[in-house]
Amino acid sequence: MTKVMAVNAGSSSLKFQLFNMPSEEVITSGVVERIGLDMGVFTIKVNGEKKSTETPIKDHGVAVDMLLKALVNEGIVKELNEINAVGHRIVQGGAYFNDSAVVDDDVVAKVTELIDLAPLHNAAHLVGYRAFKEALPGVQHVFTFDTAFHQTMAPENYLYALPYEYYTDYKVRRYGAHGTSHKYVSQQVIEELGNPAESKVIVCHLGNGASLSAVKNGKCMDTSMGLTPLAGVMMGTRTGDVDPSVMPYLCEKLGKTAAEMNTIYNKQSGMLGVSGISSDSRDVQAAYEKGDERAIITMKLYARTVAKFVGSYFVELGGCDAIAFTAGIGENSSLTRSLVVKELNEALGCYIDEALNEKREDGNRLISTPDSKIKVYVVPTNEEVMIARDTVRLLGL
Ligand code: ADP
Image 1 (cartoon, rainbow, N blue to C red):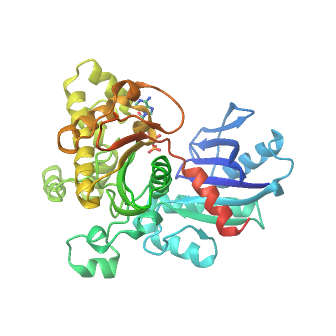
Image 2: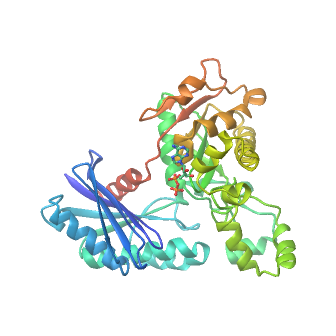
């Protein structure tokens, strides 16, 4: 039995899942939050029960030490050398990586070089990686890139209509994100469809961050996020696509720099900005159900922007066999699914059965009506298991 730790290190958090491979059994999981703040929180599952500890956690090194000590103290592993490998989620792999990679100096140098394109994420991932490297010397590491699945996009899908030199000199292009989730979910859908030789699938990853992808015969053809995860559909706090001229216009009107406006685009926009209520779709939904005007506009705008991407991907794919909803909102919000699919009824002949849509069940489920021209699925995403699978595959464990 091989034990693989799948890690997702953010700027102030570190999520982990320890797997037994190849069975894919989750031995434990948890999260270290508020790293570097006055009071941190460490949560780990022991025998299925969550155990939380509040204590200051100075940096990622301390977070990793806490986690590894807890694994031994709670009897989850007898010795740390039972952990055979660590797989890390990396947001930005640029054009360097079309698959996960075994970590060596060259891989680290490339991820470091790409910090510019994902300043918060890549830097934090490297801090997490170094902390594990130090705590578990001799263990091999694999990086799994959010961008890798999208590397099959053709230039007509990844280029922007800017002077070409910005692409060649500065690597400005669409990279996309959430690729590990899009890959997992599209694979699940293809299996649900009975593994046909040809398939056209649209994945709607709707979480706090949100993106769609068009997947033809298992390969990504297009995706809604761009150079950064700000592009595409509106999100919890991010704008999604906006007329680029809005930025200079508002900079001038508000006397703000582009960097300041960029922060507003990333942190104060989306559902939060439009509704004025919250970035959490549950709060916006509760207000929608009470008839709040701004919440109603927010939900309609959200559904419309998602549906517009589905429409454009339908054209790009030359049709569509199945649409899948995943991530926090996609998996849990029957209202969002219903509003999105209503937008597709007339043009695409796509319908869901509201009783199936409302049902809460674990696992993949079909929610479209038998006569819908496109099958609609809810598929719980699992990025961690993809990291563990790639780690085992690439290290030959
Ligand atoms: P991320 O991984 O991008 O941080 P998640 O995939 O966890 O985000 O999704 C978070 C979003 O999912 C939040 O907007 C939250 O409100 C929404 N969500 C979670 N559970 C539900 C639910 N039961 N109903 C509606 N929305 C939900």
